[in-house]
Image 1 (cartoon, rainbow, N blue to C red):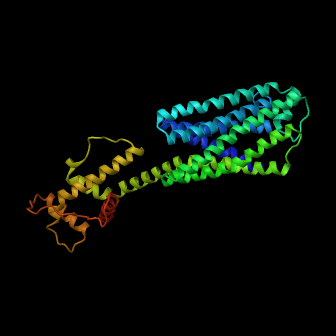
Image 2: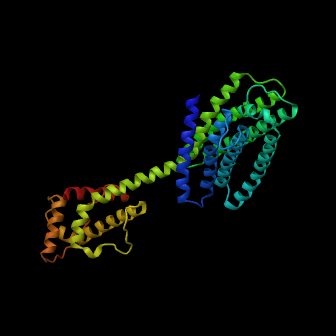
Image 3: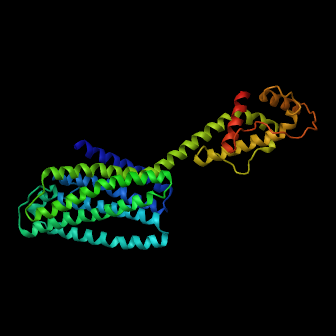
Length: 367
């Protein structure tokens, strides 16, 4: 159990670092801001929750205040996830209006929970933060504790149940990457709903002096921790998958750029005027590599068209690389040809990738 809790913290803070990096690059994306609120709420609330569960003070705050901060941040995270679905399903204007409406129950919930924490007597605050099966104290203290936990868990139950339905619904028409993320998220939500239902039932039953069996609460915890991890993974998955795909494309373009170097060097020496210098690129950044790659492919194709009349005069049985070298040598000698341009390094399939593969084969043969 302790291992699962530590894993939850590591995953939450790792996800927070990733999402903050993405937010810096796309600060105006409302869906990304919503996901940031979700991950930040769960990650920042983690140490407060651990301190409260152990009955310890943290950052000068008593355990019950730590419990309030953790629950409030969890609810902010759930609100962020609600906003994520809202901005994914609606246009920005309607989504902002619905997000403001959803903010009302969140604010009321946090205000009532704050009142409940203030109303808990000093002699019950540590015990209340650790949530034992039974508590002593007067009716006011017990009522405040019940209101705090029942309301906090009730808001989470509402949010998780609603989002489980939305996630399953939107997954049907989503693209494959987003669909996988939504299915992972909905699986986590499917674990969180029964866990929170058990917690709400436990809060209410404890007030009436009939606590639920311990094994049932343990089962809820076993549902809760994997559910949180799956939700975080599912929300991060589409964004991370997109970044991994972009990185893979960047690497392929970088490799192709270098593989085309022998062919490009020969053609550039003969036709330096064909070099595309109108958009200078001075770095190997993500966009810089793509620009260099496309520029090199275009320059290679332009050069092959320019030299093809000279290649047409060479014997067809010679390898294309030798014919190209012979054609370039003929042109450098000052000879003039009346041949028309011909197609060289013809790809077997349609598309730019097939074209680049043929250019790479020719470049390798020229080494």
